[in-house]
Image 1 (cartoon, one colour):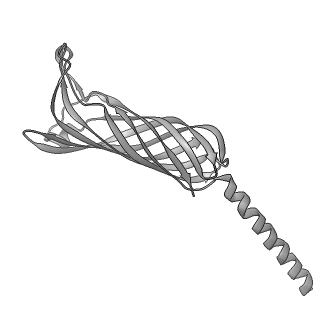
Image 2 (tube, rainbow, N blue to C red; image 1 turned 135 degrees about the horizontal axis):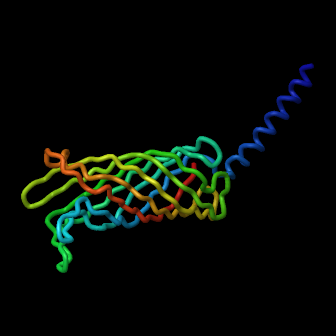
Length: 206
């Protein structure tokens, strides 16, 4: 009886040992993607005769992490930063810079697709979530901060070329409305603006 038990335990141990490398090769695990790109901002406010107020388009950096819930579905979170100018748009003249705007973007949501178990190949994915945008604004007259809710949606591609490492390119829309009450103390209804983050980075799977 003891011999049979030992033999059974040996079979189970061998099976587990064989299964571990196979699981490691699948690339199913937590991921971290540092990235860089460019933020295309929408207008905060549109005024008369073609005037507007907005932060300018700017380079950005960030990081995205994910934890798999099941194959092909993951919980994902993002933190990103961009720094541009605060500009009043003027018809014919183009616009004039009146300060700076440092923008923090953060969200959490779900991701569908991606490599999800493969270490090589090309795999599309989609994301959706909710988070916020915080604008640190500096002008010659004042310094202030405004935070507002942002809804996010994105699409992209993972290109895997080795175990645990892939290139990720993504286009992600941060949809938000500038919070004037937070910034200057009273509410002035602005645009529901689309802010497109076009990014590329290296995705590491652990």
